[in-house]
Length: 332
Image (cartoon, rainbow, N blue to C red; front, side, top):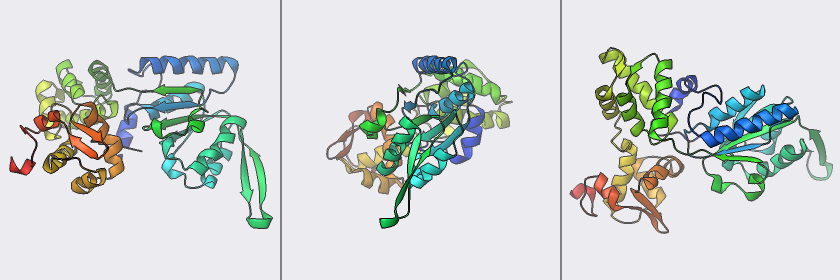
C-alpha cells in the first residue's frame, strides 16, 4: 500500500486505533458516506449482498477505514489482501474459496492486479464461481467451483489504470477527495481525545493546514506533536507547541516534507525537464512512490508540472525554494 509522506508501517497499529468505527463517526466525504449508507441499508432490508464497491482517491483519505466500516455495518466478516500480493490465479482462488457467505473481500491497490488475475476475478464477481485448471497439456481438466456470495470492496489510488471491463463490474463507485482544513480539525479533535492530549483550536488548525488535506497525515503529525507536548508542555498542544513540533518534523507552511523539497531542488538544480528515474536516483526514492505519493500534491500546489519530456519546476516552485530565477540551486 502506498504510504502517505511521514507515515511508515510502524505507525499502522496506532493509525488503526484512531479510525472511526461507523459511518456516523466518519468525518468528511459527506456524499460518499451518504451513498454508502443508503446502499448498505437497502441491501440489509432486502436480505441481499451489497453490490461491489470501488473506492478511489489519494492515499490516506480513509478507503481502508470505509471498507472495515462497511463490513461492520453489514455484520459481515472482512478478508483483506492487495493487488501486488496476488501473483497468480491460485493466490486469488485460495482466498475466494475460503470466503464465508456474506463476506466482504477488500482488495487494496486493485489497479496493480495482473491481467490474468483480473480476468479470473470477473466470474467470481458476477456468477459466484471460478474455474480451476488441474494438470497440464493433454491431461488438463477444468474444475468449476462455486464461491459463496460476497461483496468486493476495492481501493485504488490510480483509477485511470483500471481496465474498462473491471471498472464496469462495480455497481457502486465513489471517489474520496482531500479534506478541508475544517474537516481535518474535527478529525484531529476526535483523535486528540482518543490520545488523551489537550489541544486547542489554534494548535489543531496549524496541524490541519500543514497536513496536505489528508487524514492519515494529520493524525501522524498529531501523534508526534503529542509526544512533544507530553515531554515539554504539560500535555497541552497550542499554536506555539504545534509550530515547534511541525518544525521539528520538517513540515513547512505548505505541508511539504524534506523529501518534497528534495524533489523540487533536484528539478531546480537541472534547470530543465527531468525524467522520473533521474529524480528517483537523485533523491534515493522509488519512482512509483514519487509518482503516486509525492508528485500529485506538488502538482496540485502548482509547484511542478509534468510535460512530455519530463518534470519541470514551475515559477511557484522556484519561489518556494527562495530562488528568483531558473538555475542551479547550488549556485544560489
